[in-house]
Image 1 (tube, rainbow, N blue to C red):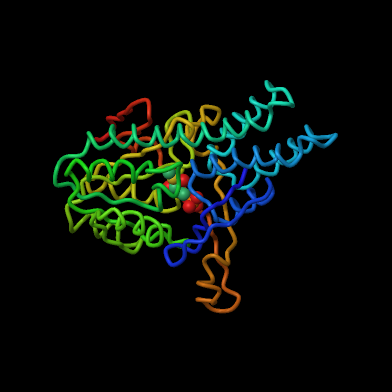
Image 2: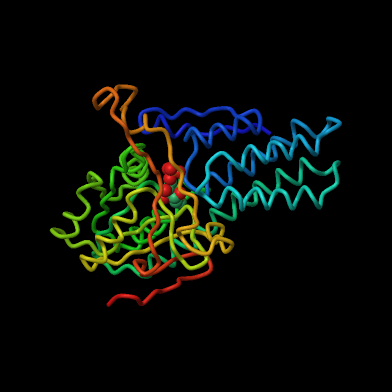
Length: 323
Ligand code: MRU
């Protein structure tokens, strides 16, 4: 199996594919943001387990070598539950497959996880688009598109389907500091599809809601707790607060592999904190004073009472909690 991953760090300027030879390469690609977005992280990790089997199955201690690789993959990023979900699926295959059939069965399972995610996106796209009225303007955050999933996208899948149905007047995309997933990736995807897209600075969202008619905020998620609280890219919480204040509806679009029933509420979801250098530097150049400190949590939690609807591939769940 040849496994190549588009290096999302270089988009939109360069489309370069990195060859990943083993599970450690895959874990590094995930932690270093070559591949990102919760469902895409899970899918990539599943292929990582298949690579691990290819590399180790003929060795004496193949079982513990694969276990070690899975352990390493599981630590690549902490918030996206899709990573743990996919690894659990691969573990089940390992437990129930003979050594002789292991490589083929793991490769087939990783491909199935990938294809099922695309299928789920198409279903969510249709379900979410049904909620959008013609002439709508929407705001999205980070990148929850084809790049972040098996293909098509969660939040961007809904936007794509609604655009196809003639319902979208305008998409606004937060640039999404510090990795600029909005300006580098979301704009890249939507403009390629001919969907009218306007970038805004993250701090412009409240002003946008106050001065333009925004109908929906539509976002993806890295993990949804058992009570419905939603983890997503830092800044999503502030969008949800602002949306409620300005009477803008708030839609979360995520496959069921993002739901974590073992975590009771959002406060218990681990929030990834990345290097302060991601804030202190831009393209390797210091953009603040020497010795400045920075705090860089990269996800936040939207409490369920600020969410109007969660769309999964199994249907829409509505929350009628507006006062
Ligand atoms: O740090 P990232 O780029 O992996 O964060 C991605 C997000 O926050 C997405 O909104 C989320 O994973 C949903 S992707 C369908």
